[in-house]
Image 1: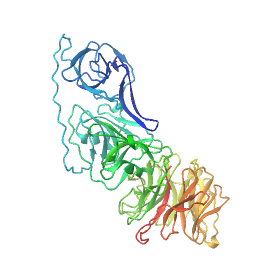
Image 2 (image 1 turned 60 degrees about the vertical axis):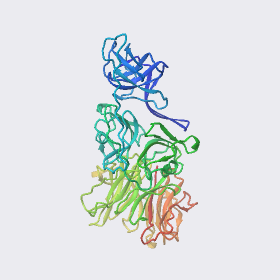
Image 3 (image 1 turned 120 degrees about the horizontal axis):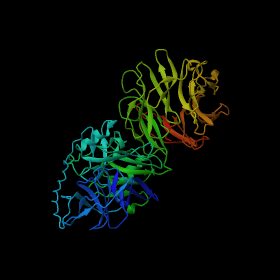
Image 4 (image 1 turned 180 degrees about the vertical axis):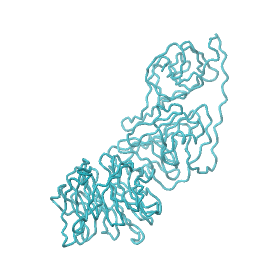
Length: 608
């Protein structure tokens, strides 16, 4: 790697300053007022002038220009200068954007053109090269027709854009970007929602490209090639009201996409991520292009007023962002997965089909939700997984037999999922464990006739579950999370609860507290109620229930609250209470729905 006298530092960063400023730098920041910073290839490229008539070229040089070669600095209006390359530097830090501009959006220098001089031998008065005739910007069609598997908001030549991939999951990134026009995109960046790191893609550098796939609804920061003519920008497909997809995790950045109607007020759109969850957002103006900004408490300096459907933005979530609760509801005619803020606001449907979707479970990093569905209509109930915004839904279990899978639960490290698997021919259920990608499905219990509702201890060593072995009444047990003993037999099996068979008590749906000290569950005592006990089964205490029927308890991430299902208002809805049973109140409040046709809310699950 060689470079002209390097006086700049190149970085890839998204930096928040005091919560109120963002420098998005895919950048070359010049250190000398008389220098020109560029990323050159010894042919037509783009550069940045720190001042007109600059005397020195400072440029990353990945393509082998040599000392003594000369290039033209075109400042516009026929003001051209031939400059000799005076020296080379090796091993300097630099950004690999092959043949394109690395542009610092925080500066505002003018863009100039750098070309190779027409002759290697300088003359006192070099003849300027003809200024290329710019290619006219294609005019978008007045009424765009939605196209499947298409990149929307493609960049113009030499410009950055926040584009959106609307197509099949796991599509190769290069294949997706080619829908903007073959060779039209020089570079692309995406934020990894799990790690918060930037992923990159360059068309000719697969060895340093780690952005392999463009997932459905994925926002990408892309640079249009100055050497190619992109196809006309395709307008976004029609959108339905209205959810921000790819919302940032607390304390993290993400490239989110507004999937809703045009001209929605920015604050209203971002509120679908959770009331007060997003504390700043940026978007690229497709016309100027300038960075537009939005701060919830500084509307006087916010110029990102509204969002259009399928518009990408870079958003940051507060470290103390409100947690969310996923749940199942049949309010729209059949059970679907929904998500809401922990205060009950922002209720949004994630799945949309005519099948049964229920039992949502968040991954430990909050980026995915496992759930149950019978959408394949083959008599199977399978475990599915999707991104936290509802995209990327796919089958994990793919069970060949006529078996039923239910109630997934992620291990604390996110590597495994425990679930119940039922054999309807023998009327039995057992606890299984599989890898998070669906491989390695392994039975954990052999405890006929019925084991279900697994929940992991916070250290990942134990799984508590319900079983009707023995007296036919639900009882809470725990078992070692890893099979052991001879031929993988059950180890560490411990009975935790002792329901009274003479009064038909029935203990079900255990949930382990985040600190590992307690287990909450529901029990039938003439109506189901929520109970809590120590993790060893001692200290059982009632928290709610009777005369209402309360069930499906779930701890909040900090262990201070418990969400549950209750029918105390005439139809089943999601409620929340403090961990000691106080402060019980309704979250979903489906007033006006007919219980016989809808408004059954169930299976609450807190996000991390």
